[in-house]
Image (cartoon, rainbow, N blue to C red; front, top):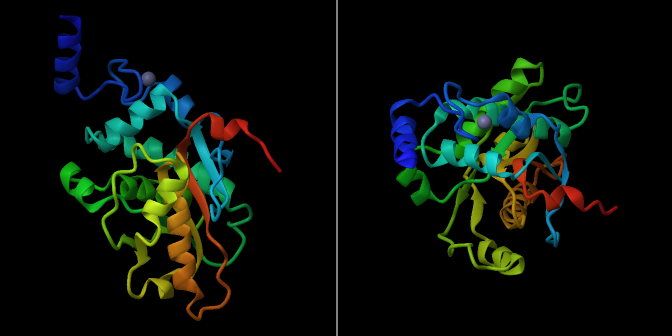
Length: 241
Ligand SMILES: [Zn+2]
């Protein structure tokens, strides 16, 4: 009965915390703290795949953070894009020290979701979070915009059940830069952005695709860094130099 009631009120009243269900708030202070209160830090998956860019993340993938990401992505709680964008903006700042003073805007390049998943959900959650992050960066004085130049070039097998190494192989060659994207990338500093890093395989492939496109003739290309909203807690704990 209680569960039934919660489900009904959750449907009728959108005003419940996306992280813990507390009523009459989109995101309670505790869950907001879990999302961006700790400050963005360097994160490394274990094991760390070759070709992974330097990754910074805003939050550990706790139950509350997972719930917020899923509420936004799968349940269409679009109001959560703002707080998720704030978290991602913090990770982008950590990934690009001194960027406010170096020439050219930050170019946030989303790691694309599978097209059929975007169609099924009716919105592109990753791009929405990236747009919110760019707005937050601009609001705080850093020139930034979203450059969705990566696209899937072939379908990939479901990643679940694959080892980290198998995931890298499964994704290899799966992404490419859209025609003309190299020109757009040459105007600023690229930062790959995503909601979640688990094994790092998607970021390895995204960095490979960007670098491959940029190597074709343009000078001054800086290897992209990466920023994500969340990583498993273990990715923060291991600190190797
Ligand atoms: Zn909450």
